[in-house]
Length: 253
Image 1 (spheres, rainbow, N blue to C red):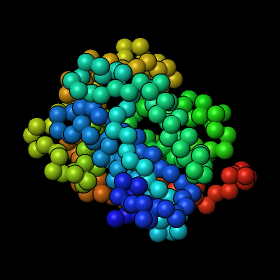
Image 2 (image 1 turned 180 degrees about the vertical axis):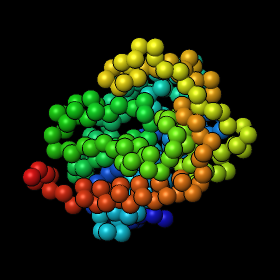
Image 3 (image 1 turned 60 degrees about the vertical axis):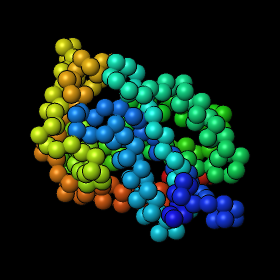
Image 4 (image 1 turned 90 degrees about the horizontal axis):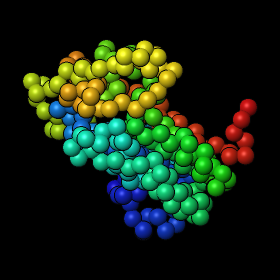
């Protein structure tokens, strides 16, 4: 039993407990090229947050990890078989209920750990901040935590070298043999501004990728995944601890 994982702990341990920070991992259920499982985002989020919480806990941080939400925004993948979509309005409703519980019980710090690129929580957090002014709600998205290309060579953002390396380290039993991996080739917008990053439109996934991947996974290794995971969780664990210790009335300098 890990006392910082809500799904594993019990009422005997919790009836007199007090936590400073709740962590909510949020993933997705979607195709990840041919070779990775539909739960890739959830598995990564589970492991990252659990290990980071361990780091914070061992420093003295009172952190509790909530169960991972396994469905995310997949509006651009409506024709990909069994990609499960939650609309942003549904996410707002779910988060409102969760935040209401934390606020009522005196856990005023919440960090949403986003494991899926289709999720966009910033507008939701802004709205919840007005409704629950005591709450400090923050957001992390792991690909931006470290310089990705210090660890990986190939560009991509879905079932790519990074995600495949992580899964080879975390759950190699769920990764198909290399000869069954797709190449992750994707089509770009003909209008160049969209590729430059200053204009955005949702991609129609079935039209940009034959195997649902975006990024060549073939240089992936478990060793790369392990190094990235360890460095990432040390940095995230430090963040969790700092948020636990932060005075909400004295956040700025």
